[in-house]
Image 1 (cartoon, rainbow, N blue to C red):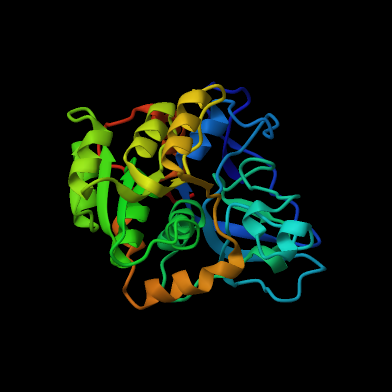
Image 2 (cartoon, rainbow, N blue to C red):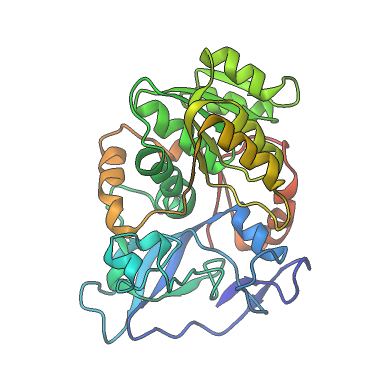
Length: 346
């Protein structure tokens, strides 16, 4: 099969022919119809994830059709249309027994702990626990966009941030995750403020439900947020991951406000004393959010089917495997163009 592979961190990936994946006894092989290009893939390529072994095929947001089924799998069959969360849970550890599959103690992640979906085929372990059926009415492009960014944003807003009607929510960073968070929060009746440095991303955020947009290059963000919200936001969401953004987000919250951290920070980024000083002074709640378990997908899928959420509006581009190396390397160009989702069709 053809796949995008890198043999060294930070070295431009290549499109190469590699062996087809072997089907795990507890898993399936999926013919990849669509897979998302995500900043987490860029972090992996840059060497920020210690779990990646070289050579490596990235890709963790995927949808497609099952071509092989392992001997231990009974619920899934060849030809089924499927997607999966980016965390493949074991289903039996202490976290999984609590229903918290997204923080499984023995998790696997396609594109990180093993080869991923920037390829024509990908093997998925633990199929009984982690596969999600894709309705016939949903395109593979949309289904692929759910597994990391949209589902992550949905859970961060609904389950972790507990956003309800009337809340003032500030989303910092309007890439794929941030734009999805804007859409989900607005759909729940929140008043949303979107913060970014890209005018195109802010324009898209406004079209998705943001009542106010702030260009972080032109304003002091905490001051502007407090002015717009009348004293501070109820919930802040960092969807980009940078020390300055976290601090701005915390300083823009009302006392006892809630901060949800989605974006990954590079090692050594955070000036912890400043961050914790803001947390203590405001009695803030700081909450991490890491994907969403397969068993939590049905309400989100129902809202999409009912037309209350529109993940298709986040898809701005579709490319082939040959385009991936340059596009992956270019994901560090913050502020160039709108955020949104780029889908790869292998």
